[in-house]
Amino acid sequence: MDRHVIEQLLVAFKDGRSTLDETLNRFRHLPYEDIGFARIDHHRQLVSGITEVVYGQGKGVDEVIAIARRLYDNSGRVLITRTSEEVFSGLAIEGARFYPQSRIIMAGGSPQTKGHILVVSAGTSDIAVAEEAELTATFLGSACGTVFDIGVAGLHRVISNMKLFDEARVIVVVAGMEGALPSVIGGLTSKPLVAVPTSQGYGTNLGGLTALFAMLNSCVPGIAVVNIDNGFGAGCLAHKINITGL
Image 1 (cartoon, rainbow, N blue to C red):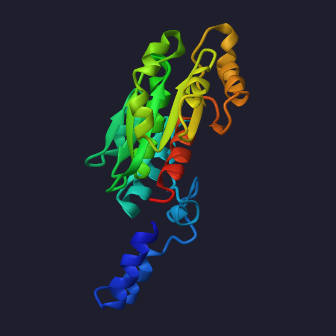
Image 2 (cartoon, rainbow, N blue to C red; image 1 turned 135 degrees about the horizontal axis):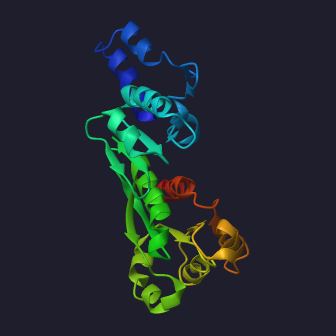
Image 3 (cartoon, rainbow, N blue to C red; image 1 turned 90 degrees about the horizontal axis):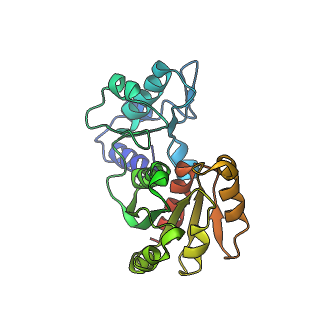
């Protein structure tokens, strides 16, 4: 439940289109709904600006489905990350979609998107994390575009997409191997840049640590770096930056 929904509820009560009991019933889960194995925060967006999202990895299929159904029944939308086809089949929400590459299930989402985020991947192997960032930001209400496989092994591919960098309000750059692409793009644009290291790479990539350290030590000032493979976190940060001032 976000600010807009609450305003609608209060106006409906004020105008006599909703009874006191009906209005209070919509607030019944403040501050959260306790279902035993989870405490579901239906009102998180009021505090942080980001609605509660279900992290599927490490949870049982039935647990993920139960949490997701509660969120969807309350708000008409839900985002599940790091999940599976099995969860999608059991969820049975009309209009929901499963994205197998990023392992995301999305239903509903923001009815309007604003601004413009550009999500870039260095290689095709980084697309899963890039798609997680893109879908997260889109779900939250940001308009997103993508350009994939423009890593530093072929710098002409970066240069040929300069127009896309100029059109974006925020750029998310996802890269494994040595993690150099955020520094390259950061040196070519004044736009805010969120760097995402991935675990893709040969042995001395060290599961993404090499890319992470490269991004943290970038010579380009003003680059924000999220955790390894954390497309979700990048999508959230880019969304917050994108909607500021809109």
